[in-house]
Length: 148
Image (tube, rainbow, N blue to C red):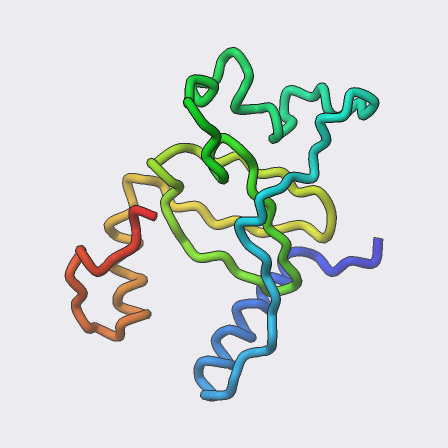
């Protein structure tokens, strides 16, 4: 296919991140579009994918979903958001809204690398990140945006 192995791309991503921070020079320009209220899935009856159980346009309205009981749609929760990224784009570590699970569909492009932290390790992960990010400066937990 001509694409670089994902391990090489990931290694270069971290190398570039560390080199940019250490050198003090501005990082390369990376574009990322977030929270676009739309989906790559169709609801058109002529589209065979529209009937898929994994269609993100209809997933929250299916009979087994508690989200079908919402009085009005909530963008990004009961209706899909679309994200558009390029090489080396990054989305912040976060806990999903209301601690719900997340469903993602990769429509096209090179493979993505996801990092997930088990809930049991959240406090240890925050300690490590705080040590790296704030360089030892203690932050009050009320300053954190960890709850979304």
